[in-house]
Image (cartoon, rainbow, N blue to C red; front, side, top):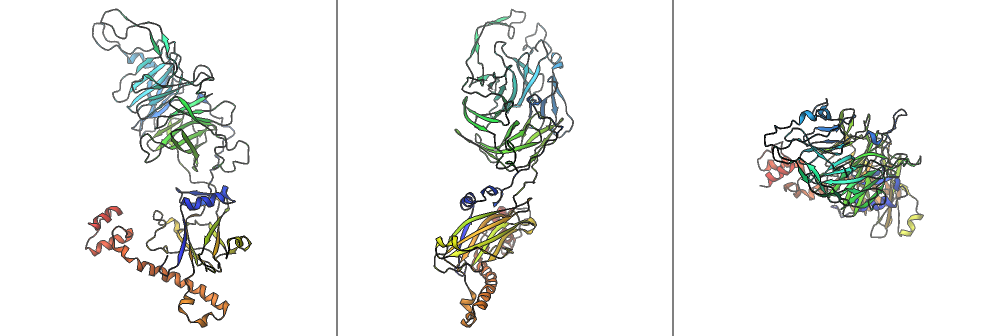
Length: 611
């Protein structure tokens, strides 16, 4: 209510606007977005096209890759016989370690000296497959033929420690993911299709549950620990876990997993991309069981431009994925963004992920993330960014502000009650951002009964005009956007002939394909406080046509004076450090004979004045 006693209806926030968007006939072209600040035209992502000469990426292009806490990138070279390193801040990569130097890096101690037994390399030069950097700064790399793990201590340096896998327990590491507790999860694709497994290693790199049935191992002669010059010892019969099976017939069946990712809540995501299938699937494992399966068939239908024009255009066939926790997420909370890169290698897609218990939700985000010259090694998360490889450089995924918007859409169904018969509806104000080339057209109708509204013609109202400031005293609708080319703020129009207890309003939002108007709040004032009726003699109302014009003309003056009188009525807010606008704090400090440090933020300034 303003100083004249004029009330207003307020629509603000998701609770008011989201039902209107869902009920609209143009619901596919409208959206409510808290992050983007209001209701507007639905933006869609353009598809970055693949050149005809560009082949699609395959699983064989994947290489283990990761980044340590200092910004150094590690990955397996194309020959699978060396580990490459790109130091932080450098654009030149080099060899971190090669299989050829294994024998020279493990010299044996003299036979008559009591010392740890040197880690023995295998007889043959193995292939390297799968790589991860743990929380405790160990670099873990898988080996094939023979199978095992290489563990590099990145803090202390030195040669790696090789942990051979028992020959009776097959393993073929393909992808790895380290969690926040120092544990490492390994995706084992197996020597043959359908023999995939998942292994979980604790921070000591020992196999931990969940795992399959243990396998009994025969006694083995070993010289890992023996007196100097003494005989080798015999390791007794023991059992060894076999990993969690993913093959056909198992409760955790995943046909062709290609990537693994651990979430902060301890659950595990598996990316499945079958040959011959046009889309991928994401499986979520909780305590060794599949809790959720999400198909990416049609996953981009709500965010991709022109996705309905071709069959399968909205399907996503992913090459790799990476999870980035949300800013402010608590430890153990699986909330953030899951990035997936398509197997054409030209575009990545961001999905909002929220996993709570057995609930798992993936929502595609409106972020255009084109990628060029992607080599296919994979995605790597580091800090607050996700990186992809281009030859031997690692580049961050960069969002491009190039969403495409429909030309127009109508937000209808705004029904209001004036509380009294013959209510004269006064003024409409929108807290909105209307960029150059965009507009919001307003149409209204009023009737004494709600069932008469559909029988009443729509009236086109005048164009909206941007006010210098909001009509609500000390209200700043866009404090974070003080400029924005002068298009953000409170927009106003005077309702012309809307008279009746029940009032209906609709907004037609026009965009220019590259941008959209966004409405953050809507206020409709009623009934009209008329200067003609309140302050002028009755003779000015004798001629209806002139009186109607004069009433609307004086409403412009009334709007100016009411705004000024409202600020005068709430002037006490200027003298309170808690409620004063930020631009008034210097003036308020001057009353105390103080000058504020220009480097202080608003909170520090208010604290200083209050004390």
